[in-house]
Image (tube, rainbow, N blue to C red; front, side):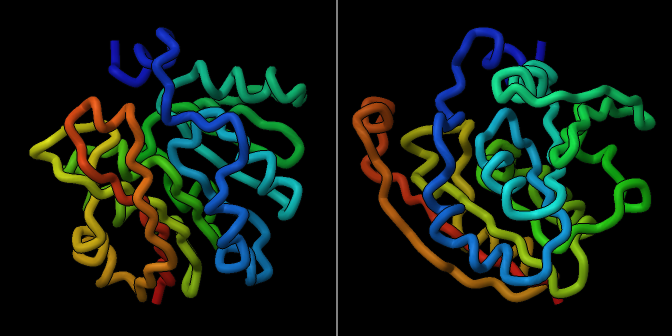
Length: 214
C-alpha cells in the first residue's frame, strides 16, 4: 500500500487543515486578480480551500492520488457529485468542483485545458527531490501565459529531520521554476512548534511564493 493511502486510512493526516488556509485568504488578490475562470489545486486531498475558492470563481479542479479524501470531501460538505472515467483517471464532479483521482502526471492539458491560476499549498512538499523538476514542468504545462501559481513551501534542515513533508528551499524553487517565469517571495514565517521540536528541528520556515508564467 502507498504511504499516503496508509496515512489516510490510519488518520495520520496532520497536513490536513480543518479550516481555510490563512495564506490563501491573505494573498488571494495575487491569485485571483485576473479574470480567473478556473483554478487548479494539485494533490488537494479534502482541503476546505476548495470550497473557499469555489465561492469566488466558476470552477475549481483538483487531483489527488488517494481516493479516500476525495470521497470524504464531497460527503462531508454535502455536495452532490457523479463519477466519470477519463482515460486512466476517475473524475468526481459537482457543479463547481471537480477532483480527479489518479496520478498527477496522467493529467494532460489537451484533455482539461489550461488554468489561469494554480494554488499549491501542500503538493510540492510531498514530492521527493528527484521528481520535483518533472512536477514543476508539468504544473507549468497546465498554466496559461501570464498565469499565476501561489506556492507554499516548507524549509528546514533535512539533517535534523527528513520528510514528508519535505524541505523545499526557496533556492530550489528558483532553480526549477526560474526558466518558466518570474518568482516573488511574498511572506516567510517560522512555524516551528513542539511537535517538530520533538523530531529534532530548531526551526521550520513556511514561505509563500508567487510565480508568474512568462
